Length: 384
Image (cartoon, rainbow, N blue to C red):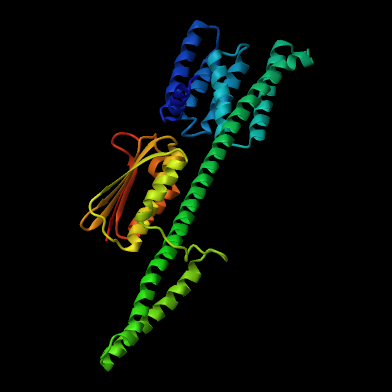
């Protein structure tokens, strides 16, 4: 059986119409069988029809399957032959009782075994009133084994579905936790990088303000005091930034916060690194190169870096195109490839979440998904 056919069959069995349709079909088959095999009493006919009709409610009211099972045994006790429709409905009823865990499987099998023994004893008394032999208990043994198999199968299916639901719930919790941790780690990394940017600028302000009081002649006392206040405020800001950096550090020996951060001028090295591992990439730059805020260039560089990393990871051998567009008030970044795209597309990667965090912190937008001509496309716009 092919996978698609198995999936369609499973979907049909899981539909709310399946119990009613199967119950009606089995009841119609039972009616035909009773007509074809007319040697039966009214008790047998009612028992067979009741056993099949009661199956229609086995999903909405699982306990009704017990009525079907008892009706099968009663109809069998009233005659010497077990009708095919009754046998099928009895097995389905036992399966439903185990599947929906109406009672503990041991109790279901034990109860069914006792009723089967009663039916067997009734038959022995009817056929051989004064003859008792272990050979005559074969009927009870067969019924008990059938009940045991049907109940066990239903209980096994129920246990497997519960395990699958628990595993899916656990995987969902782990995925949420991983995404949360990735977002927190990305925020911390971005904050450390922005610390470097701001710390550099503030330190320059402090030095320039401090040196202005010595290098600029004929400063009035008010201007000199103003420069000193600027320098003092800058030094206080530097101290506060250093305290924040100590909070953001992930552990001793972490020097990511003080390492030089790349800009768009380093895209050539990034492209060369991608090509050195066998990747094909083309870089296109439009507009006049302007000096952007360091945070903007750093975020754009990281977006291109993560985009090329995703190409190598999810589409090895694909051709990538990196486009940088300098617009009057924003920077446009575009990374496209002609590969199949990452599995799960936009919703599964931590790298894409990091890109979105970066652009959102700068007031920009980022979209990621299948490209218009196939492959995968990442587009970001970062205002300055």
